[in-house]
Image 1 (cartoon, rainbow, N blue to C red):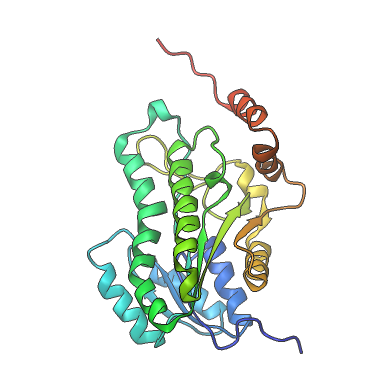
Image 2: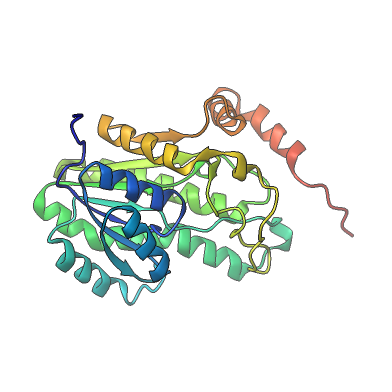
Length: 270
């Protein structure tokens, strides 16, 4: 029997009711981890827990910043200690900058950047005291280059990548690892739940994300990267266009910038 890579480790997973978070929970359950699953939808969390063969659940809103200290206390009471915190909760965007309200930008930053930052900030003293811990921040390739219709999403994910990289340098001395996931297209509900310029959801449609890597495969790639100690974990279908764009950002950024200009919707305005 193959050795379980995360046997007896405790893992707190946000965004566990769907998508990559759910898939990561199921994959970790098979690896012998003890799980605490979080998200907003208690029923969906219960379904994920059942798929894991049983797990603790703790529903909360990640942007309820006043409540987060108490939530962390509950998590520690449930688990005893936290070996791994996986920040997966997030929302995407499908709107042009000129059509996007400031309140939408604020919401994107709060959900995709400030929420994982604050939760991590509250968990870190516990990890530092134990001189061990592991953080997984799901940042997306949107944190590596900008693409049209996602100005707020890209801004938040760039912030998450930059913060994670700087944080890693500071807390390595305490035995804490920081892993950043830069996922390309993965089959989740993120596209239909993306916000438009007025904050309403896009709804179902023909988005390229829907043809992406299955979430279960993404979870396996993430855990394999974590087990190897890989600090930035690129996830996506081999040969996928968006991963080629990621490589192009390093090889020839001007070419990528021009490509994005060509992709951007052309809207006549007075």
